[in-house]
Amino acid sequence: MNDQNAEIIILSILIFIVFFILILVIISIYLKRKNRKIKKRLFEVTKTNNSLEKEKTDLIEEKNSLDKRLKFLNDENKELEERKKNLQFELNRLKLTNLRSTVDSHSFKNTLSTVDYFADKTMIAVKSISKLFDYMLYDSNDEYVLLEKELDFANQYVNLYKLRLDINYDITSTIEELLDSEYNENLKIAPLILANFIENIFKHGDLSSEDAKIQIETKILNDNEFVFVAINTIKSESNKEKGGVGKNNFEERLKLLYPDKYELHNKIEKNCYIAELKLELHE
Image (cartoon, rainbow, N blue to C red; front, side, top):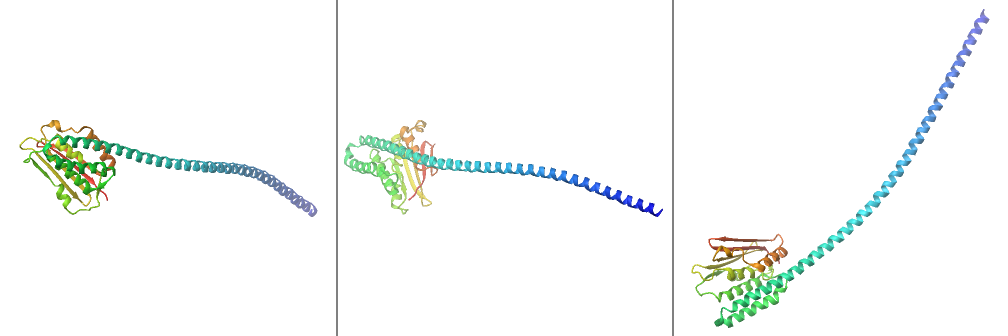
């Protein structure tokens, strides 16, 4: 009986061992398969990662290439902008040269026309004209001249025109007062800027009526702001828009010489034409 029980126990132990070994084999097979899948997945991930790294490298190279191209285009654009700036400067210079020559000839013509009115005052006129021509032919070649020279020219120009007026004509001017006052002597202005106003006063103004008048005001504000106001009686509203080529050239010169640094106002008030110019001068 005891032997039979011992055999049963031994058999049970053997069955348990076999069963345990079988389980271990099954687990081992499962782990091997799982390991193969993991390795396969890891291989695929590694392959994908290598592919992404290659794409990343290609993108970096493409970016570097685009950066170089962009830098080249920026450099080229800067060069084109510089060339454009130089061309614009040259164009403005040529415009100013052309406009100045037109203004000079226009003033020259108006001055010669004035000589017809004073045969008996020829000597005085000739002396004034000589000084005016010196300024128009020499000083006006500069882009800017001292304000004192332009004011002196304007004063002589007014005095020349006054020779054709009746001695009792009402004309007042503060140009000489400004010349005699204290201001920055280094201030500069474009030459012949004031000629346009003076010519229009005497060309389009009423020079014969009893109540006619001419008034010229000049002053300097805030150290470098020059103000010129010309007021003259007119015969009718038809004089409002006169000026022709001289007026167009004058406004074109202002735009080129004083961009955003000038104000020009014209109006008719109580049968008077009022022109006001404000300029920001420099040294």
